[in-house]
Image 1 (spheres, one colour):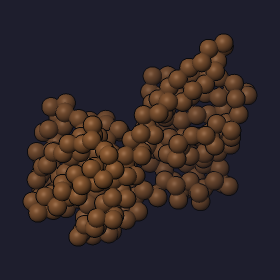
Image 2: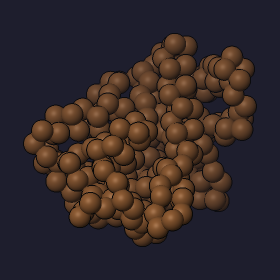
Image 3: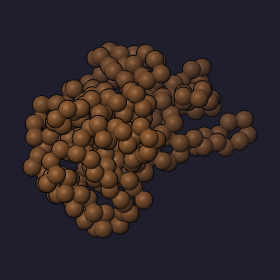
Image 4: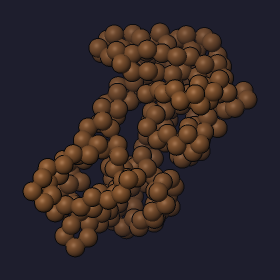
Length: 236
């Protein structure tokens, strides 16, 4: 069961989107429930009470606390990197400003069923991927760790290290082979580093900073591809 939030100060937009979402859930066999807010403040109050959402359709142009402020509240204050955010706006010029919030999509008003369906299915697929587990073998045992917990992989002295918020794990292997089997949100930025782009805080053409403060170099051969991969989901 997916809990999907809609926050827009236009009641007609909320009603239209809610209707689309329920029809898409029925069409694709996805169980869901929705909650609706007409202001950023009321949504933030809901989240402060330790309530959770799986997916959020969020209007950027809210009158007081706008969608970007709400997104920053979710990511920075609540430290919630798991909530899937899809922005909504009547303008198409926000892509770079949305980078730190890490939305998975951007919808332009008036909403179209086809574009809503595309981002809905993408979000469901992304949610499922995040809940899959990475399996590795070390010292006679098999281990599993959720992909969503992994910040990045790095190779050193013929060992692969998995870095999470809780610490590091190590096993034998080749990073290039591992990278080819990872979900699409993992990006090889260097022959020694594979990052989970959901944990990228900010970046330049040459460097990436992750949410744990780690600074990693992007190799010259990977810079164009890395920039395209990171920005892909932020484009309208």
